[in-house]
Amino acid sequence: MCTSGLEDEVERLRQEKDRLLDRLQLPEAERCSLSMEHQSLDELRRRLRQSEEQNDELKAENGELRQELRDSELAMHELHDQFQAEEGVELRELQRELDNAARDCRLLHFKVLSTMSYARQFVCSVSKARAWVMDCYYYYY
Image 1 (cartoon, rainbow, N blue to C red):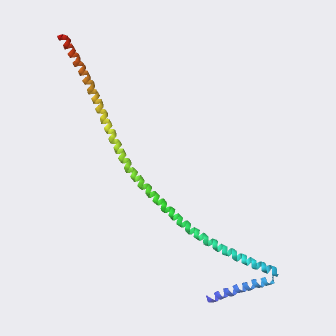
Image 2: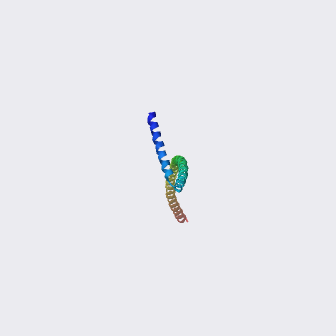
Image 3: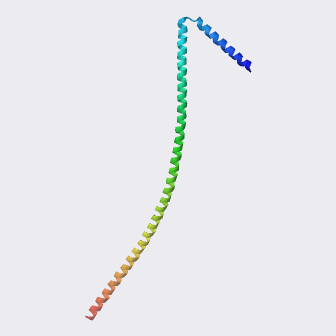
């Protein structure tokens, strides 16, 4: 196990040596160019790490916001259900009051009709009594 780790390290070092030798064989301008490319590459790696960190932070914030949204939706549904229950109770009370008012109106309507019938009979009786009184008056006088 240690041997394979050492063999891997030796191979990596050989590759690094070959790369450096190849670089030494390049003209000075190209070596500077490679140095600039390494700096540029390092800068890009740094920016990539920053972007990944920012991405992780935004993902975490997004998760928190999603959870807040779920909690808010749940609270909204609970309030809606509570409102529906309260409205249902109030609706049943109003329906009961409406039914009672309709019953009272029917009773009053019946009483009005009865009173009107009684009034007609009374007016008819009064008319007959007046006629009888008038007949009696003319009969005796």
